[in-house]
Amino acid sequence: MAIIEMAGVRKTYATGTLEVEALRGVSTSIDMGEYVAIVGPSGSGKSTLMHIIGCLDLPTAGGYRLAGEDVSTLSEVALADIRNRRIGFVFQQFNLLPSLSACRNVELPLAYAGVPAARRRVRAEESLARVGLSDRLAHRPGELSGGQQQRVAVARALVTDPALILADEPTGNLDSTATADMLGLFDELHALGRTIVLITHDAEVAARAQRTVLIRDGVLTDGRLAS
Picture: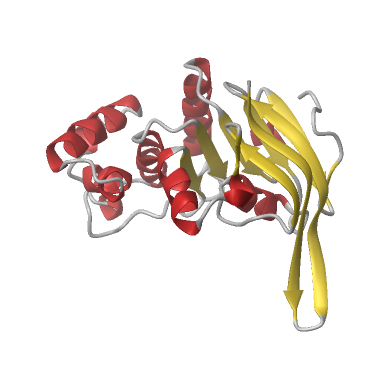
């Protein structure tokens, strides 16, 4: 079953009289349980594609269905709900709140969803244990290494039990040891049946995925290109 279905997706940005076509007719699909890397250089359109996959932006033209649902018909409130419940985001910059503990950072998506405090705590602790940080619950981001901070970010992405993990350059701020550690964690999550879409410019990072999709100048060279 496809979790992501795109047909002729275009995205045009307008600045005054200037129009830039960031995506030019993207068509592809990603099945439940796949681990897919979207690879391209700077300016290729991969960030725009990530924003559309993550319901952070909408196509100018074309169709996008997430888990069978046409996102173009949804309100901003409904899109925010999808982002919170169905998609777990992992970003290059970690995006952790420095004043909160690891556990409190992981609880945030559940707080937005209205989950009671006691239940939030239990689920956050379970999620941190899943990424090997049971002994860092009370540590603030500044007390953690870069690799540990990214693991907290992954735990936060997992805590809502999303259908999709969307990782945007998740190893970009990590050294080689932490990068290997993070990719090993993604391997483990994929083995457990998680759907992972990894956005990267690094061919070595992309090689860990089950399948690779190449993007250049807003066009996928092959939407079903095997890695």
